[in-house]
Image (cartoon, rainbow, N blue to C red; front, side, top):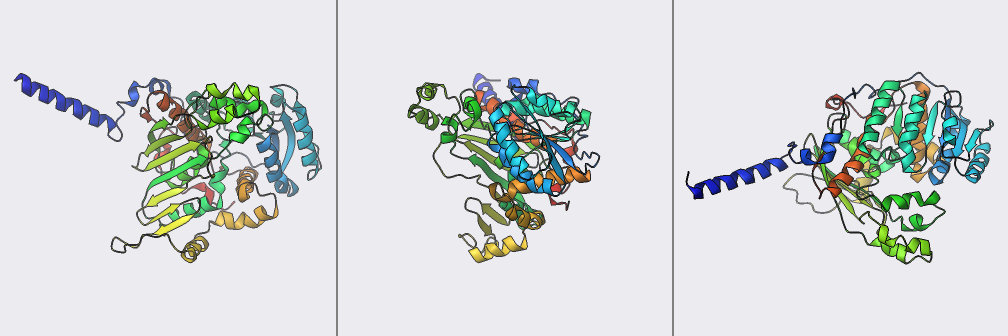
Length: 469
């Protein structure tokens, strides 16, 4: 072979190898990442997917973490307690003042006084015992979610954790293995899966209004600078500390959870791979420098998390997802909630709907309010319509979705049926966050997402949130 021909041939081989590396389903790039060799799903069999436990006529709840989220969930439980479906038997927090305030709130609607556990980092362990509770409700800082859920399951009680349920790959896998071994429920409490708009979109997708869904965009865009700088809002400023040492999508599930329902993720499709990029950081450090507190000013140069993280995710069935995270920038709150199908498109915040009438129609505007209202009435999700009145009459929590979420959890446990969301859902959505950090750290490298269900995802089934409980 002549030298010139050899160089041309070698160049074509190089280009071909590069292109094949980016081809959907090829693992060649991700294999170079240290995380690819570390994630091992050995020992996971998918047996907890439709896990059922014995019915619990009155669910005894041990609540750990009495900050903003924990105290709000007490309100969500009040109706369930009054109706005899649940009882708060124990509360725990490291801060005794928070325990007393929570106790006063519970006494307003519950006769029996719950046991209290406080004063140390591990006081909660005495509450997470089968003699005390059937369910551990975990509303603590993120770093406690996994160890508390593991401890609860290993001690014979179910676990329900606020988001994210984990933020390392090893923790995601350990939660699955433990749920399978102990036969205890372990659910991540993703309230946005129960919001009126998201349930409406899910119903339209299930009824074929969107045709074939191909793409979605979702996010958690929420200016939290004031909360992170306020030493009284997050105890010991635990949330700010994560932004001083981690870079990626630290809060995936509010946007990703509903989209996974739209796309039948783990119920006919699965997330396959991602790549993630963070912008430079500016907004949070500027806010820290502008603080009147010298301690806050001293942290300005320590912020690691970029202002905006964008993660692109592919699925086994060829769908695409754009997921964003930004709690630094001053902007209106949004979860985006964009869904694209072959027959319709929806953009959230504000909610806008477009119904396609074919390639020759030529429409370029969103549906009129009257037409959108017609679709909202026709495709209102039965779960929301059944519970809306109760949510309106009682403490709603984020427009009603918190109440619906807690209602479903407790009533499923009452009846001994499988939960709407299982440990594989929570672990997968949390794993995306961990992989986003790895991708950012490795120059936005592709990260393959392992199958957490041992192939169970390949069986198409309707999402259980549509069941009447």
